Image 1 (cartoon, rainbow, N blue to C red):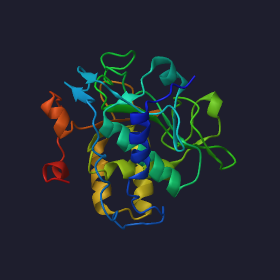
Image 2 (cartoon, rainbow, N blue to C red; image 1 turned 120 degrees about the vertical axis):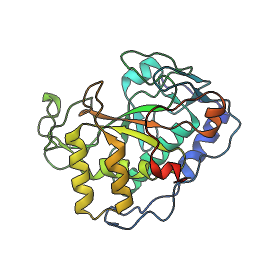
Image 3 (cartoon, helix red, strand yellow; image 1 turned 180 degrees about the horizontal axis):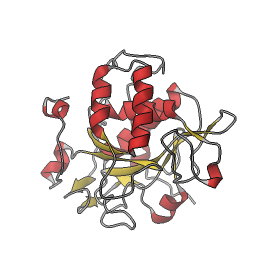
Image 4 (cartoon, helix red, strand yellow; image 1 turned 30 degrees about the vertical axis):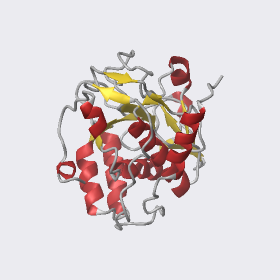
Amino acid sequence: MIRRLSAHAARYLARLFLLFVPISLSPSAGSRAPAMLEPEPPQVDTSACSVGYAYGGRLQNGFEMPLEGKHHRFTWNVRKKGSNFGTPEMVSLLARAAGVVGTAVSGPPLVLGSISKKNGGKMRPHKSHQAGRDVDILFYAIDPEGRRKRAVGFYEFDEAGRCLHKRCKGWKFDVQRNWWLVRTMLWSKRPQVQYIFVSKGVKRLMLNYARKRQEHPEILRRAKRVLVQPGNSSPHADHCHVRIYCSAKDKRAGCKDAGPRWDWIRRGA
C-alpha cells in the first residue's frame, strides 16, 4: 500500500512538478541551447539535509518522493525498503527531469531505483546511497514493434543497444528518451550533477545520438565529463546512477563532496 504524504509534503511536491522551466521541449531542437537553466527548488521549511560523504554519510530527515507520479514510479524493491527519500534538491531534480522527458516524448513513466532511506546510512547492496544525493534510474526501452516500454528490471544493454536478458529479448535502448533525461539533468542549475555513472557502451550510444542531432556544444562537453563508467563497481550497463553535489545548506550541515568539481560549476554554471 502506498503511504499517504503529509499535507505539507504534498503541497511542496505539487510545486516541484509545476514550477520547472522546460528546456527546449522539442527533441528536434538540435544545437539550440536551453533558453535558461532550471530554477532552484522552491524554498520550503524543511530540515532535510545531507551530512557527510555520499558513500559514508547520512540523510537527516529525508524528504519523501511519491512512489508514483504522472511521469515516474519507483521499483517494487524501493517500496519494500522505503528508499524513496532524498534531499529536497534531489527530489526536485528527479521530478523536473521526469516531467520534461514525459512532456517532450510521449511514453511510459521513468522507473526509479533507490535514493536513500529516510535517515540514510548503509543500505545493502549499495556502497553509496547513504546521504540522499544518489539515485538509480532504469533505462527507457523500446520493444521489437517499436513501442516505448516501461523498464521491467535492471537488465543490461550491449554497445549496440540490445537488451541482453531473456525477459526483454528484442528490446532496444531508447536512446532518444535516455539522452533527453541526461540532457535535462546536465543543464540543471540547482542541484548540480556531479556524476552520471553508465557503461562505456551506453555512453557511446547517447553521445553518438547527441552529435547526430547537432546537440549544443556545451551540453555535449558536459556529457563527455559527467557520463562515467565506474571503476569500483559494475559497469552500469543496466541503469544509470546519478550523484549531485552538496547544496550550500547541506555544506553548512556537514555535507562533503568527493571527486572533481567541474569547471562550469566553479564558474557558477
